[in-house]
Image 1: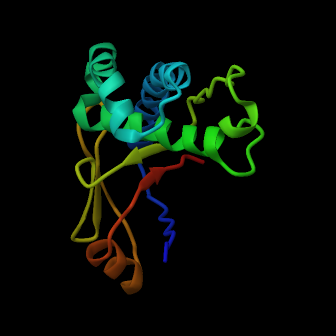
Image 2: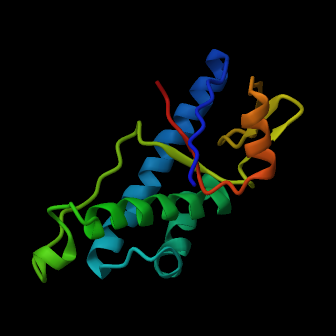
Length: 161
């Protein structure tokens, strides 16, 4: 069973700006990968990684290796939804050899984190940013804490409001 947990982070203005800069650059990295995924009709995460990782690292060295991997994951995930989703009008089974639409990531698109770029310890969350990690207090229920520390986390996404 998948469980979604939403946490509000009490960010300072500076922390919020740092995360927005990360979010914008993350979207740019995704937009570098998306045309390659479309051209090669490749949305398998590992295969897409092999096709694009070096290019992403070269174009966006400040993202670091793990965020480069996370951007590739974001494109893989979105491509699977658009190009393979059973209800998608762009499903490759429906469009055949016709050109596929290009997926574009807006600067406000979610940023995907993982255990290397986000950590929860002692009531604080630590998040990767382009300028170094930020730390902010976070309030979680006992059930959320148990799930976050004992459960298998499949993905963590930052959504800015």
